[in-house]
Amino acid sequence: MPSKSAIILLSGGMDSATTLAIARHSGYRCYAMTFQYGQRHLCEINAARRVAQALAVKEHKIISIDLSTFGGSALTDLTLDVPANSEIAAGRIPITYVPARNTIFLSYALAWAEVLDIWDIFIGVNALDYSGYPDCRPAFIAAFETMANLATAMAVLGQGRYTLQTPIIEMTKAKIIQKGVELGLDYAMTHSCYDPTESGKPCGRCDACRLRLKGFQEAGLTDPLLYA
Amino acid sequence: MPSKSAIILLSGGMDSATTLAIARHSGYRCYAMTFQYGQRHLCEINAARRVAQALAVKEHKIISIDLSTFGGSALTDLTLDVPANSEIAAGRIPITYVPARNTIFLSYALAWAEVLDIWDIFIGVNALDYSGYPDCRPAFIAAFETMANLATAMAVLGQGRYTLQTPIIEMTKAKIIQKGVELGLDYAMTHSCYDPTESGKPCGRCDACRLRLKGFQEAGLTDPLLYA
Image 1 (cartoon, each protein chain N blue to C red):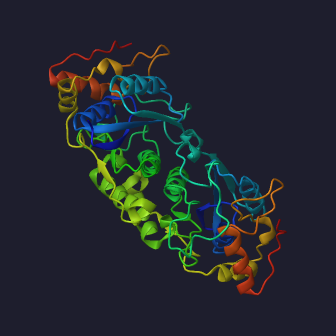
Image 2 (cartoon, rainbow over the protein chains, first blue to last red):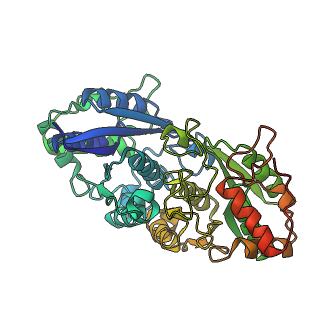
Image 3 (cartoon, rainbow over the protein chains, first blue to last red):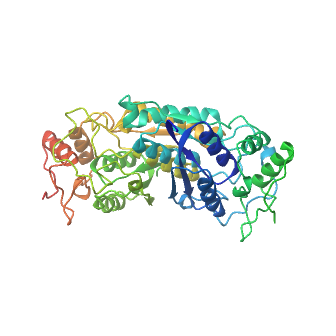
């Protein structure tokens, strides 16, 4: 029987699904949190629902927030195109970057953690297959953790210490996939594409699809998804 | 003509209204951000609208977020009573504390700041008339600022440095009121009560009302509001 609980940020993509599988395998009772934030790839939410159910989370909270009110990202602004070719190689922050996204997500997770008296928050950020997002780096995670322990009544009263768990932060995509498969995770449930077809088929061309396909290739495995 | 812009978190209460007046007086072009977060005192939002208009902000963004989904606070959970007597003296975190509220508010402000290319964020926290909220203390503000400069593309690319401005953090309520009056702020526009009547009249008994009335008394001024 699990002795401790954790909150897991679950997007419906491969990284967060693997992170949830790892948390569960480590003996945590898991509370999943998913955000509907005005992103164009809504099938992510359905993927998150499938994964949460398959991995038997204790509770799955889907929070609607409207990040598109700020604009500035191709993920939430329908007037901007998702680039077909990767910007990663150019060393630039991609246009699919959503301002302060992980900061906002982790803030909500912290609020839920405090109410549930939970001290571990899992987030599937990855700094190795570097996507150019500043809020996926270890320095950001460490700074958020420090802030969290000064922000909340439970921590300030000395009831515990919040820990951000980032089990896949140093893994390659191939390693992530191998780990997930080892834990019995079915990646057919997950969704990665930034720009899927209307029926939800991944495009195979955007940054997210390219990283995913490269990962499966390097892991010597076949992606169970059908591409457009 | 103002040379720089700032985002100001504006609740509609005295502290944030004074903070906005100070930012404006300091020459900032002001962008106000207000949250409708499931709080029971919705007349705060109307107060924020009045203040934003009177102080001629460049844009006023009202963000709906549902913090009541987490429960745990008398401000958002209608099954909990707002205490009539102050918990401040007892050295406890009051039941009106909303988990991670300022962390969530500042995260949204950071997202908007990044999109607008603004580097100053004003928040009217106050640590002196200590309300028992951990996320009003200088240590929290400093930790959030550090985190913000690691979280965002603009900061990481070296385009600037985010600064959290807390002009009233060390002021007494009396001093805040004197400052606002000096800057021409009409406190009749503001709303402080946690538990107003249906017509919006302040109760005069909750922590917020008591701090407000004490402040006016110590400033040697009369609160322009009519109490229930």
